[in-house]
Length: 339
Image (cartoon, rainbow, N blue to C red):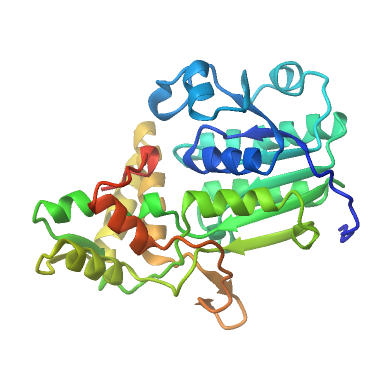
């Protein structure tokens, strides 16, 4: 594995961005543009939530970026439509499967990235920055294994790499604001203290990804990263939200055992009804996030370690809650709309 940190990165790089229409991808592109890089975004002809936005819409949303359309799962499209025989210094990928079901996970999180890596090497790209996920450190789900398989291929590729594994996103933790505002209880799994995370905002993560292009300390490394402040439990999220809205705390507790029953039933039925197999995987994903912390895993001590989880940025989840409640911000949650 290469540990060379002497790479003289050009001050202004030419970057091919994948997954640029997702919320993290958009933040990364904005940060890259602010840093003075030339950014070419390879997107689907109609991208965004439910494929409602055209290339013209994206040119308005991300002014200064160059857009090309095609299919990231097709090698010919990557070669001729994305790279197009041109020079690129770095590939930045925020690409991820939308559902996490096995077929999508292997097609996008692994296969599409593997094709991109192959074409990138043939095109002379020097650096590949990958947005992964902190949950792959304790893999129990298909999409985690798919991500890990590509991480391994990237590290063995000979290219300079940076693998960023963020903790929880704000958009994943803001789904209960409206229900609490309407007087409904805040939903908790177990006692609400089974898990904790150091949530990170889109823009703080986008800035961190942009920094990976020019900071030698971030080359050839796997980098877990969270936002500022201490780790937060779901119970603390509920307590803050009730206080912010001036409401009496009211909780509804979902037993983990009930989730186990749902997963087991769907898994069993999935052998007979294929569509239920996907629902079973989604249920497994839900159970995973309900019971596993998004923090660095200490395998020696068999526990999650908040102190070992690095932080970056300035915006806290509490800042985000305040802006959402006061109408200063709207979050495009898309596939993260769980509640």
